[in-house]
Image (cartoon, one colour):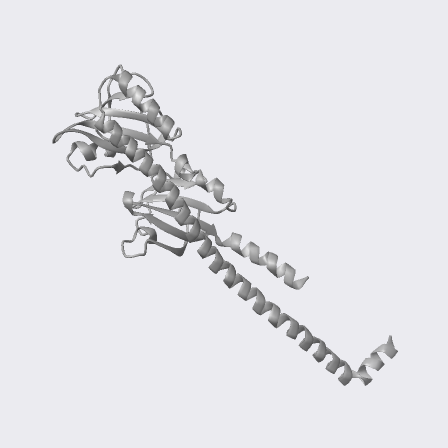
Length: 289
């Protein structure tokens, strides 16, 4: 032991020089690796932003197709309106088949806002819907063609649904309102086709910030509003990206969005930043192997 210490003492300058060479060598290796990791992380976030916007554009096409299909059906029902339950039920059945069972319920009110017919069952008693925004907007003369409501729980179906409504008109007179109720799930089942990570989400908003649908589906999120979302700002481009911490679950995400201007909607695809970082960690492991 003493001989070892004596050797180190006698050759301490050479030992110090050797340590300097070793440290310098490790630094030479570590600096390029560190630069590479930073570059990989930067590229990963850029790639995530591009993917989220691309996914959002595809989601917008999906949402536009469903909304267009439902609107066409609502127009047909309003044009062919008859208060006879059997005729209405048969028309509803054909429309539901054509839409691929997208609808939860098809119904119509009279001019006073009372539900008088539904494809779910023959109405023996009228159901008052005058307090529903999708009925009131037509009966009070605010009719703007198709109206899309935020999710509400049906008084007949007892299910959450988005209401697509159109006025039944005869000349200038409003005789009632046709309503097609659509399960929010049909706007978010697109989520499964994207094969996203666990904390990634897709969302559909109205132009007033109301949440219409979210995947994975979260019923507790219904009623949430996002009034300051960049996707709803009339000054922003039709499509783009931004970063934000979700007010629903607190997860930090990179969002791609696309506006469905024909229907006053915007869709978003959010990719978890943590998920992106995990992919970078995998790259880092490969660097150090």
